Length: 232
Length: 122
Length: 279
Picture (cartoon, rainbow over the protein chains, first blue to last red):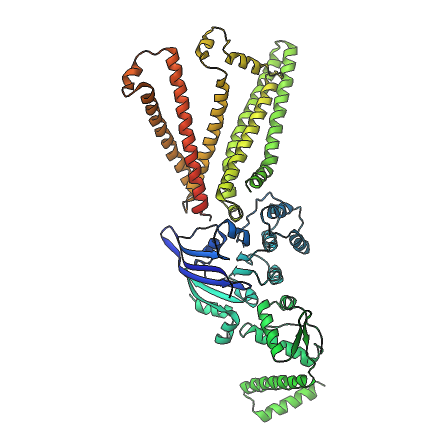
């Protein structure tokens, strides 16, 4: 059991409002993990803490044995839900940028993916549609040979064909040394590619299981289980 | 190979079933080389670990064999494929009978319906 | 990494500044043309007026250039580090200090470029391409100034005045940038009104600056004139003593500025590193 991501007693509050309460989580290498929960459950907060753009209040978080910091940022590839490039940058500038700052960036992979998506390297970010921008960011994030990929709602606001492409990219890039952590609402689209699923509610882990085990035990899809667990 | 999954039951079991079916129908020939796990996973749209689990089990059950540096192959299994056919035939028949029962038919009615259906579709 | 970050700063803002500089230089050269024509036409009111308008235009352009530099420095810091682009910048394997200083250094470079353009522009505007005013300024500053009124006032000061002025400008720019940056960072700690809080902090820090200046002034007086400085300063001063006092205030202001610069930058980096709060 090779633990890649470990949280012990993680706590995070926004002001006085606790968002993550005493969270313990252990994620292995070589797994594709879905973190599912309703809005406000703390899943985006958790991802941000792992990405290093939010500081915890208490507890321990390590990735590959290291505390969150510059060393973990080198091995974590983060795809947030928003456009994070300057609107005036061209696609080729974003490639140069990633290549400049990330040693694990594979330019050929990125260029090949952009070509197969018919995205011109000369386009400016602001000229692209929202869906295309998200694809560009996904391509760049997946073109790094990272140990942890954090994909925060990678499929929201994207058409079904693009969703298939995203899932295909995740599967194609799979390697036993890395893990992919996905948060999403669109569970039925994504569940076939997941190894494990983590249900999070009110800042606490409800459970963390292998998906086929869930299907075997409960005879239902993850999507159905989600609706059951998080019924209003 | 066409893949069809129902998310309500374990995917790896469905993979096993569908591969067995392909072997039984001859879509996968004896000694035919299977694509790499990752490639199969991508085509099927499933998790590579899940695919690996299914293939391992098929290997354990003797439907596949592997050569270390080259990959996985379909076993020569004349007797296996007959057995497989029997297995699947029984499975399909069971399912059919169950469904007809749920519509309210008795067993003898089912035989007549089936005969009519077959002669009608000629 | 810091170098790379600075490189990207220059790249992303280069076009805009290039455009501004070109406009300023064009206006300056046009003014030069107007100057030449005006001189050639010797006293003709029409050309004289044209020249004055041209000068006004060029001067306005120069002022706008500096204003834009300041505004863009602030906006760039906020947009790149505290808004959506922050999701990219803060996940780079670089320290918060690098991110912060890359913005500071890039802004200083742009201000320096502004000054170079200013110097060039002055040459064109005044029709004085040989920059003879620099020579005059040097003479003015040297001890050989004649005993005229102005000469007397500054005769105690040598050519170091230029150096001090330059230093003063540099410290002022860095101080202004540090203050604006720390206000943005402090404002970003708020969850709902980051912009408003930035303004509020600016006002707070303004008063802090004023209070520190006052304290500094008192300290200076005590140092120079002892505990009963109030009485001492009522008595008539010699010119040399006045000059010393003026020098003292400059030095004290400089010290306070430097202290504030250091403190503000520490706070900024601490916030970016440990209290980052992107939406």
